[in-house]
Image (cartoon, rainbow, N blue to C red):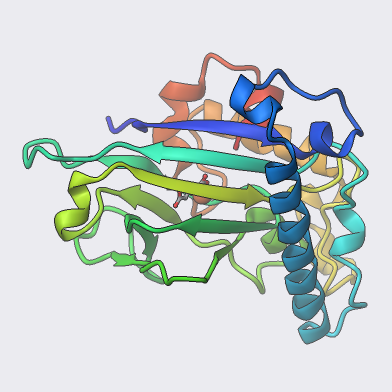
Length: 252
Ligand SMILES: O=C(O)CCC(=O)C(=O)O
Ligand SMILES: [Fe+2]
């Protein structure tokens, strides 16, 4: 059984924008709130731009995705700070975050040390040649699509399966820090296929769910050890099964 081995700290957008009480934060953050606020504002601009481009390419109204993830409506997006430990011992080459897809719409990721891998199309996570490195590039963010985009586009857009492996070469002797923005949907956002709205395409069980109901349903399936698609969270069920489904949804 493989478990996650990393540290993270999530800062909710809702507390930073004032649409929910600010969560308790450690002192260095409390006194430097302008930094996460500015990171969030810039990140939201990029996320909205990507969403508008994707919608336009799909012949949808350009604001269709952004209108379902308004920053002023909870449950909001999170800023995530991650630390994956160095792997100096050749006997303990770890996978820090086991394979998964992100739940929301778009994730922006900034990191310097390598370690992120994506699953090659059509491969199973256990195949030895299944994983491709994503090499960080100076001045660039890594963009992941999340499961909500799959739902909204009836599978035309795919959320990629990814994991954090020990970094390649000499980089494995370094702790790896990354900072991400994981964009979430408004609680009451619809989860139907927005690309093809005929009756047949809406037969999917999720078409009548709100984003909140959909997230809790997915989290519950994970906690039961069921996979809800081609994602790999099933191996995480042990580490998160102490949490109520709603709490798990807020974490992923
Ligand atoms: O730190 C990274 O490179 C990725 C983190 C990640 O996949 C996640 O937080 O969902
Ligand atoms: Fe992820």
